[in-house]
Image (cartoon, rainbow, N blue to C red; front, side):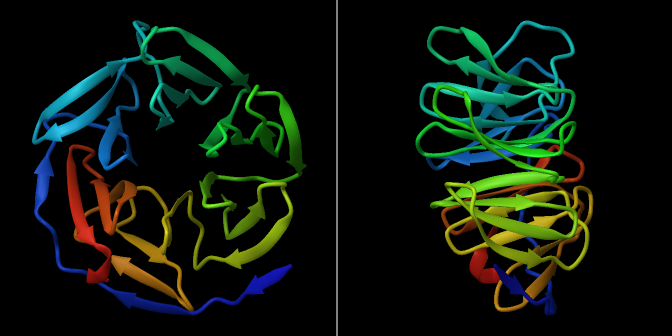
Length: 244
């Protein structure tokens, strides 16, 4: 097991022009060079077109349908409702429940349509195969957020990142500068932050604190651009990663 020590630098990028969305969202995802957003409570996932123009993917007709986070694939939308992980088939409109628990904090998809999810009720990181049967578990662990990138799983605990391979073997523990509840991983970046703070931490040889003139709700990485949904939840900001 490899332990990474903590160092810290600080910077502030040039503010980008904000784009008004015309409505409030809670999460943002970058997929196939497109932006998708979801409200905390709503019936649709919105594909951003321009300004306040969206293509809507209706996923339910339920009232007070909660969307804690989601992921898009060519044929389906996966939605974490907090108490259930659901799969909505875009073409047929059918929906199925993949997993249920009282407190699902986060999930991520692998290229093979397997799922890794964080169950805070049972204190487990659970790996589901492509048939959604339990493949294996990591027990006695409290994970806030999880991301799959390349062949690795990045599981964010309160004060560190546990990095696993696809078989659940621990590759590395990495200490983070302060408690965080979100992690975003790209080809060259690991970002951690706490929602509604106005700064993020970016991993490198040392951690770099990057401050913004607004609070942060969510972030996704599109090519070399960081797309930030701000704390008001109805503006997005774009920054080139080389600006930091």
